[in-house]
Amino acid sequence: MSRHQALRPVFVALACALIAIAARGAPPKLAFNEHIQPILAENCFACHGPDSAGRKAKLRLDRFEFATAKRENSPAITPGRPEASALVERIFSTDTEEVMPPPDSHKALKPAEKELLKRWIAEGAEYQPHWSLIAPMRPAIPKIENRKSKIENPLDAFVLARLEKEKLAPAKPEEPARLLRRVTLDLTGLPPTPEEIAAFTRDSSPAAYERAVDRLLASDASAEHFARQWLDAIRYADTHGIHIDNFRSIWPYRDWVVNAFRKNLPFDQFTLEQMAGDLLPDATLEQKIASGFNRCLPTTSEGGAIAAEYEAIYAKDRVETMSTVWLGLTTGCAACHDHKFDPIAQRDFYALTAFFRNNTMPAMDGNVADTKPNLFVPAVGDRARWEALQGEIESLRAAQKARAKAADEDFAAWLVSAKSLTVPPKEFDVPLHAPLVGRLLAVAPASDARDNRDGVPASGSPTTDNSPPAFAGPYGPAKRLDGEGRSVVLGAGIPLRREESDSIGLLVRITGTPSGPLVSSLDAGERGAGWEVFLDKGKIGVRLRGGRSDFAPSGTAGTALTPGEWHHVLFTF
Image (cartoon, rainbow, N blue to C red):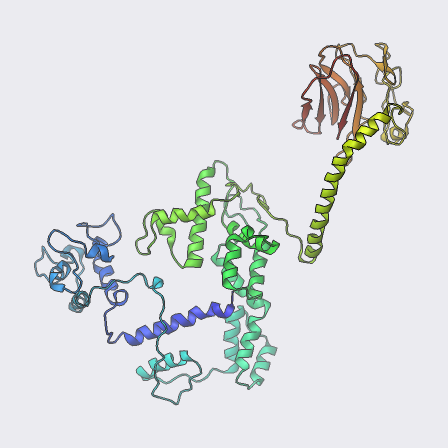
């Protein structure tokens, strides 16, 4: 958005105001907004205006179609015919029962105001919309009789024309130091430095002021100054705004606004990216950040708050902000009723909310800094490498998928050769190989256990006895569980650590559909963290236990093992 453009409405409004003042003396034709609406608003609209609750006689005088509608006797206003207009008859009446405004309203029209109403109806009773909805017309530049005053731009002509009418002389040109101070405060919010004042004072060139303005507009201070005003208007905040009001991590949007003013981003693009930057085709990171405008609103996570209610509140807030900032309309009135002055119906207001309710933001913010949906924004210096990494990650993911697909054939080939392998294979890092027979099981430190390759722990006390007797297995003797709840307890020497990847493999053969524990690292009291492999009606299951009592996830296979056959069970963590 051009910051030159940002200043332009101020000058245009000022020029229009000067024209209106200059023309007010003898207008060629009465204007509704300037001459008539103030009279009606002061004396008539309380009973015959847009407020249906206070309206009397079912008469509205604020809109043409209602004021000129047929009534029992005659319309309140008949354009071009004041003699056939009930309004003229009533305001000129001397009957206290007929005159308008009625005496008990304690309002009375001045004779000049009555004549203005009569003349306006005779001229056609032309209504106008609110002044903000009327397209501005470029006025003719006034001719200046006193040519002693210098005219450097069209605005000077309007100022001088009014000064001539008031018989006033123009003020002298401002001193350079004060002139620079004014424009610097306007464009940056900061005073000029002594060095800037000294340089500007020494520059006697006619273009010195323009150069100073260009320098100020190109500064970071100017971008931040304009961004601050914009962020105030769109209710930016670094906290949630309601309830605990915790920190909200939305500062990348603030920086985007500053950069938009710094780059002089065109206003249409400035609008589009904030409204729906994340919906643009192949949206960039910056465009996605720009749509953070839609997250700049007070949110809550208060207990007892109703989600549906707050979703409606958020949508209302977004419509009101968009209307105020971009349209210059106070649509908020239409949240409760048709707008009394602006042409916004209540139905239109809630139709607008549909644009803002098609999102995935939850009603409750969770009191966290990064309420979902959120976006990871790398530091500016890391963004080029970050984007390059995304491409590399996608390539690696594709390679992973291709390798996983090819692994099926490799695994089938391995199964054929695995029949001649010893258990465990020597090339694997096996912390513990336990045939589970005799006095071979004991708790061993992880370092000792990981060095063990022959199934005999280096130290520790036995954790299982020799009964019941061993059973012939595919690779040697195997322990037989008699179904009385006995299991193999390895103890805490075989933990699963969060930062590591481990697997537990068993060869299991069942009879019937048994249930109960098989192998466990939990102690008898199930204190502390650990794991357990169990059977549930012939189905293999795994249970984990964390350090907290509320963390004990478990899962069971979908189908039972086939009785009488050996099964290789592998649990990967």
